[in-house]
Image 1 (tube, rainbow, N blue to C red):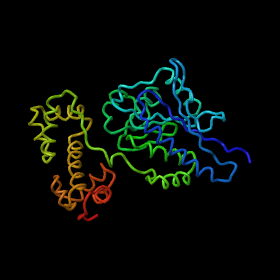
Image 2 (image 1 turned 90 degrees about the vertical axis):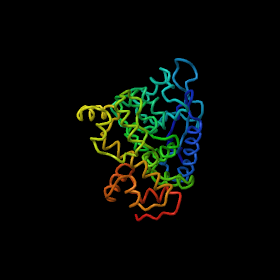
Image 3 (image 1 turned 30 degrees about the vertical axis):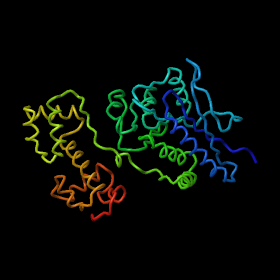
Image 4 (image 1 turned 90 degrees about the horizontal axis):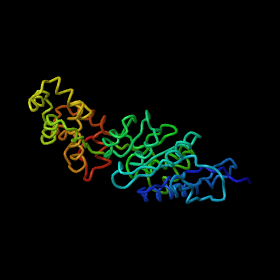
Length: 330
């Protein structure tokens, strides 16, 4: 029987790359190969895993690890792992950037994990595309790469020839997404089952906490932000916020949107839902009681806002993340 077609997944190493992501993805893909090899069809694909690194200045990356060194070919996918520390403090050398652009132009799908999106964005290939990264890095990413559309609510964004994953541990989700795309759902599900990890479908907003920008420099708006957080946004009356700043209402609304990137209503909702999450996760009060505590007299309105921002109903959130016995009605 002829040799099976190789589907090569390459990982791009660079100074500061997170070793656990490289090792974890390598292991996941190697394990997936067991299920591919169990297929008898000659047309079945076999997994090849490679690591690529620029070993000399001004030279493109070359393979430094390969599960099939005897075979020819180039990766179908190249992934940039996350970095440890400040993501803005890492950069790819020019030869690696040029190599990634060349590989992409010849049909290679490019991917990133967590802060690896910062390095992938240095290629310019993300401009105008929708991507994700860790929710903590949203503001610095937007400042550095204003031409890229960022959506940190989603854990994995598959934009065809560009696939990005959010948090540092989202390499598991990215790995399963790649298996599903290139090797089929059976291989993906078998791999997730043997590794005891959830199949794709999670969202980053289940885990992220509201971390607004406080470095915008508008002191009047900053004063309102501090007040809202100190009072858990119990008072969402526009007149109260305007009075704190001494600005005209239209000026206040314009400057608030410019400084925070959202309306006052959106901002207050996020503060309130953050408090609701804590009460659902660590307390035992009913959903109705929590709605009242965070400022909603209508539990249906509270549930709608919570579900819109978190992607789960209050009951579903407590069932998944609660630390105690739930007393709420779903």
